[in-house]
Image 1 (cartoon, helix red, strand yellow):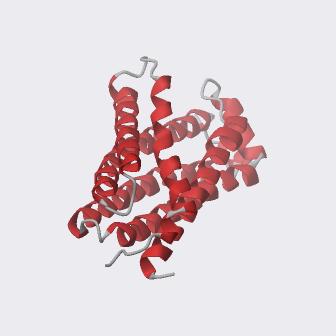
Image 2 (cartoon, one colour):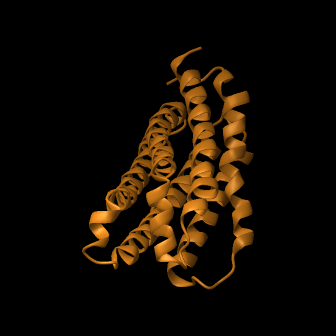
Length: 225
């Protein structure tokens, strides 16, 4: 296995880990603890289940680390296709990772605010609202980060489409996925009441590419750096 094949395998594994970590945090852990319509209940839920909330944070951290690794490994894997475009694509994913890190700091703030309940409540019960607003800041900032991720997927799709050692279909699927992320992000900021749940079907483009990386990508032959 040469370094390009290894990079393909690392990319597939990294994306797979992210597919497993983010849904657990966002669809299993946080919904059990956070009720955006009830600030007091949310505060007490997190205070009483600090370990579970902390696990959600670290699942996001694992995802963030994988983002950095995948940015690097896909750069190596796709550099033979177009070096400059591969660098630009990796840069967009790194920017996404940086903005995501800034969003995650909100969760660390929540962890701190809920750590000393008795002391904080002797000061002001508006701590409930502060915690909920900080959680909303996380969601909004994380959502904003996906504008960079959508742009990244479009660039990645173009890069994959240009690569002679990857089926062009995956490039098209990635471009569609990137457009879906951009539409979803714009909806959040400009048309929050608009129902665009059907757009989520476009997100599967990266998953299909991940499967190809795990099954075929690390076995590509005749590719020179």
